Image (tube, rainbow, N blue to C red; front, top):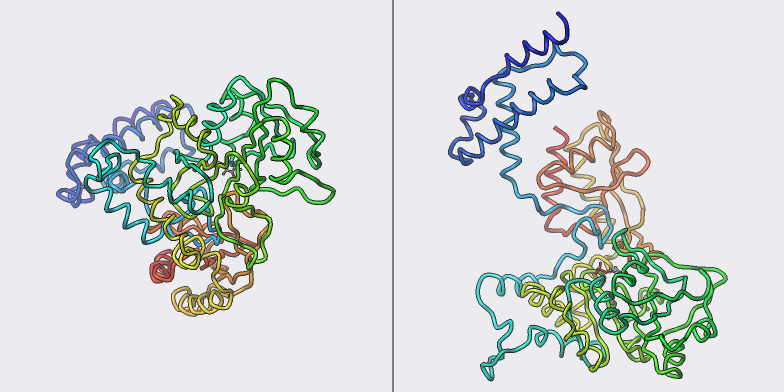
Length: 472
Ligand SMILES: *Cc1c(COP(=O)(O)O)cnc(C)c1O
């Protein structure tokens, strides 16, 4: 038979949609899923085969194509089930990357989840002053807390830190020049590139210094009548090491003061805790930048702060007021859910030990390697029972902060390394990712590696079950 005749026959053989609906695979789902959804899935399945047969790139072996109603109905049933699932689902993060941007960055604390739930399901005093009964500000729930924690005079919370930087520059430096060191022109995950954000804000970027060195005189020589501010950007996802120099916030402030200019600092992560007990002195704290005289500091809510996605602006009252009253502030305004979760997160920082203990980001960060080793060994022991034949061992490794934070910090951990005997580690990773709940793991040297640092103990059983399902 010529391919054309063969295709014509196959097209004729394609079962009709209502024929598929009578098949047991779809009949079983009647009642569980709306009829409309089954109809839609059956239609899409038949249609997908029709386009396959009509496409210029026909499958190699047409004769082997199974177009039986049973086969297509089973496929339609899978499609209908998949479409009925939520698209956004909880996953188990077994990568050991604490702030995984693709996995939603910071998990919220129990307190934040409770606050979120309380605010979400009903009405709340988002913009009502309950004392006077008059209209209030949604920022009021956060501002005094932020001022207390950072020492700043005023605060404003917007949708994310990219918006915080953009809005600050737009409101304070539109049409003016802003001087920034070449060593600080950061890109964060592709969508945030400092030069582009600055250009969009209407501020004119003036780059000074070289990649590795920037001196006081570089800034001074670039200052003109049109200069509005000196910008310092924390190189949050890389570090320039070796023969380097850059100005501290205090040094930048002294240049700015001498010329009547502002200092704006984008800190990225926004750490409020002292990390020196962990041997980390590379991460500036918000309160230190404010104390050093920065006029405005911006940072994220969902990086090392451990809260919801948000951009936080703290600094001098007059400047924050100018930003607040800018037209664009409305465009990047936060909703009640963010306000609720952020208030609860910030309250934990009033007692730093509480923040370390109760914020998932920090408890993962502080997890003791000895405990991680014991947990890994216990998981490995149980796994050997469900995955007989696979090579399973506990090996030392490193976890990372991730999310463009603390790029050089390596947290010692212990990994459960699985070398499957029947399939590749990549194939096992794919099965786990497609399972329910999806499990995201790392692959290293033909092994699937699980890092329990980012898996709450309460989810270990679930992880074990996901692995034993994948083994079947
Ligand atoms: C992460 C980051 C941003 C962007 O913050 P988002 O909250 O993701 O919008 C901006 N600047 C720096 C230095 C960062 O690290």
